[in-house]
Length: 233
Image (cartoon, rainbow, N blue to C red; front, side, top):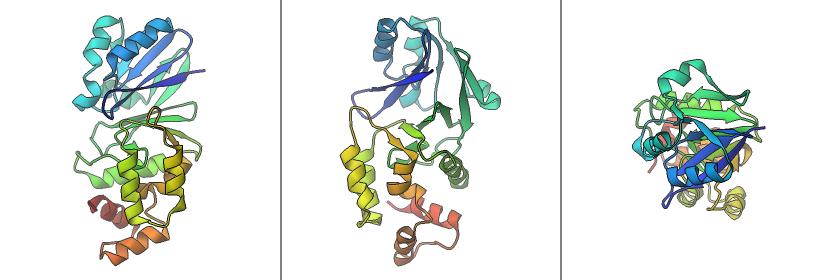
């Protein structure tokens, strides 16, 4: 069965290695030195390098990984239409999630979802694509996954995200639980936990709707509520 290993650089960026018994694929390998050390110790062959999107804080490790191994770069244009990557005869689903950028992708296997800057643990990414409606549909697509789906994000902004969540829902008891479970050495959550605290997944919750009403923000439709949440600073 395929496994995942998370790597963290000196700030908040998170890289991932999906691997089996012999082969591996790097996703957003900005922590290239750590990934190369890991595959050497585990005696793995890195065969693919790819990204959740093309921002340089996610792609800057690509050259090093490609130069030091025989791996091949899988670009958005190749894997997005196919919707799948195969590693050791196991399938990794590639999901189009435009919003943060037009080329944003998520990767799903074994109940694990690598979300890049589409969905953070506790928040969502900025909408650099300019298309907030596309972003909304991408979040809705993620929300349809099993509640036990494990979320691995592209950055760790948990503390700031929970401060924002408290601003909207100061009486939400799940926020404190979420923070107690937070491990900066291994930031991760389940989709159920996200639905309990992440405001950008809670646009149908009564307390969120009441907040929008109090602040004279559009709230009548689901899309309006999403757009209103994305407008709050």
